[in-house]
Amino acid sequence: MRKLLVLALVGLVAQLIDGSLGMAYGLTSSTLLLVAGVAPAAASASVHLAEIGTTLAAGVAHWRFGNVDWRVVTRIALPGAIGAFAGATVLSSISTEAAAPWMAGILFTLGAYLLVRFARPLRTDRVGGRLRGRFLGPLGLVAGFVDATGGGGWGPVATPALLVSGRMEPRKVIGSVDTAEFVVAGAASIGFLIGLGSEGFLLPTVAALLIGGLIAAPLAAWLVRIVPAQLLGAAVGGVIVLTNARTLLRSADLGGPARPAVYALLAAGWLAALVLAVRALRRTRRAHAEATTAPAATAPAGEPAVGAAASRAAASEVPADLAATGTPTAR
Image (tube, rainbow, N blue to C red; front, top):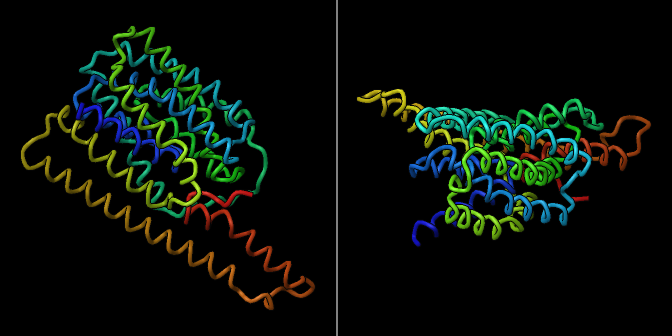
């Protein structure tokens, strides 16, 4: 019972992170299950089965808050489902001994990516426009495959790619990615069911993760408007890197004084990423404050003062809000 309560709490925290950041439910949950000694395929299968319920709840919540672009969802979900089914089939066919370092390596890489990504200023500088299917299709295919083979990865692959395109509001990126993940999680679960059978799913673990995630889903859809994505992303990335480094070091049979040295180096990198994330967040907030408080009298000749102030506010709105809260204010 104590273990199930801990897993429920993990599911709750993982869903809060995922709903606020657009990623990391699978990464967080799978990492914990691997540390607890669960086989990689069973861990990924159980997490994805739980995600069917959590992503459905998250999708409904994001839809009610107006965070979903259904055109993007329809164009990324089907390729993502194909990639997830293929990834589940591949992972199911690999032995536990061979799959453990493979899965830990994927999770470690994605965690390091989160550290690097969120240690820099979050910007959306490109001119707005519609995302094309020839971009969304391959993106969904790759993200779905990585998600199933790594026990997580749909969000870390899909969310940053959509954010840097600059063609969607960050809150709609997160809401659309979370909503499309319902289809991806379903396809991965079918793949694991075919490859592992029903015994491949740890049903008590699934139930605990699901309960925690369902409780957190509505709150996460609201938190996406106020949580500092810059700091949350860097913090989660460091946790994932350190926990999966344990499996990699064990598989490499690295012991003695080398192991503590590696952990110290990784911890120092995590601390540096957090410091850089704080500095980037402060710079962006300062720039936003200066842009919005600049006197209207500085407007160029021929441009009305009110129009100039509105133009400056509009120009600074997306990057400032993304760095400060993870998403712009709903319109």
